[in-house]
Amino acid sequence: MESYRNPVLTGAVFAPLIVCAAVAPFRHSFDNANAALLLVLVIVAVASFGVRPAGVVAAVSSAVWFDFFLTVPYNRLTIENQDDIETTILLVVIGAAVTEIAIWGRRQQARASRQTGYLAGVMTTSQAIAAGGSTAEVIDQVRTELTAVLRIDGCRFLAGGKREHSPQLNPDGSVSRRDRLIKVERDGLPTDAEIELVVQHAGAVQGRFLLTAASRISRPDLEQRLVAVALADQVGAALASQESTLRNP
Image (cartoon, rainbow, N blue to C red; front, top):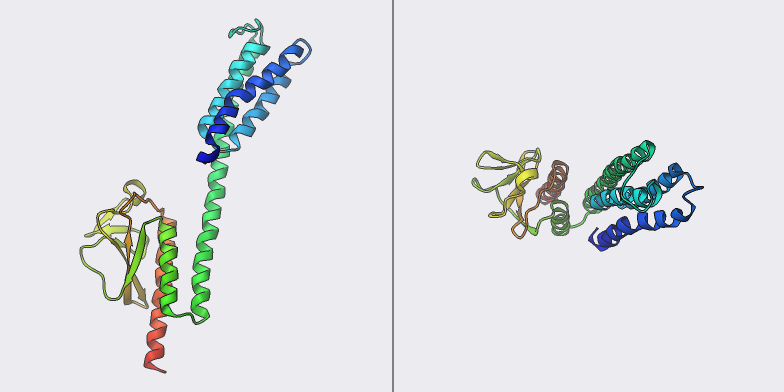
């Protein structure tokens, strides 16, 4: 977003000015309601980028320049006509509403994109297991997926059971430390210790992923944490299958 934030803010300031200045020579024959519709189009165009300050700025800029160029008395920030006052207020209100709708839409689109990515990661791991890939390859792939899904620094896999006093990413997606739940969405994942994600299958512990989130605060939502648990369970199934094959060649 940072790459286009400043140009969008610049457009939010000057686009309404340009539109109003262009319409001003025809203001005696051009209905103000039509001018307001043109400004609404400008506001919608700016708001579509999903930058909240830009949408608000476009709405305020539209109202100011509409008042200055197109309402009596002209070239002054004063409005005498009641209809023009209502139109100016509506420009601001519509601008704020359109901006919020655009931001909501972009968030929904981003959420859908993330869900597709999560599903792709789980499916890729499943396909690697089904194709008979080595457990080392599966573990390495899941390490990469966990790092991306949880937005952490990295993780490593260790065989053996869990440690009692380490933070835990539990099967239900919650994160706890010594039986105390951590509010991840508010406080983020612990940064002072590795977080353990137990790898198990059919109740038998196969190992654990140790997750590191030390360099920055990461706040994966419940959906992301459940995807991480699902990925770990796939490793557990692969390891259990390998053990079964070794016992029954």
